[in-house]
Image (cartoon, rainbow, N blue to C red; front, side):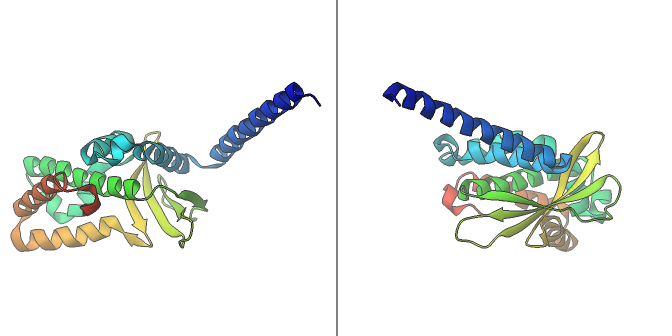
Length: 217
């Protein structure tokens, strides 16, 4: 076989392998349920974008990106209501708006830190539990990293119209929503809602002043 023929064959083989990869990814995506596709597409977009130097070196810019990407897929209104529980009903409209804004920033910061700290990972989708309430589901996943045990990350999602949105995340079986609810309702019961909102404002403001390596929720 001539050198040109070898080159043509190598180029064809490379193209064929690439094409197979595209078709395999497409076929896999088609096998996922609509809620799973929401998680997959969002995670892929954030994983590829946040590893760029412009985002790894600028935490504020990274959080702005994360907020744009996840905003259509997270029901921040539902999360805020569930987290405050009975205190949501007694809050003024102004307090509700300010709490939603600051709590949203807190969640976005937490998500941004996780995605910027961990880059080499894959997601394995597990079967959804049966008997879910109509209009709700749980997307069960395992986050896989080389040399580490899989981490279970499950997403509680609710359907709004034709869209599926996340309203809780369970990491290792621990609900973030429940954790925040316990912490916040205890604080509000002791000191009131206004001090909690001011505390969130301060925590968020301080987070953007600190080096990325020192981020804490």
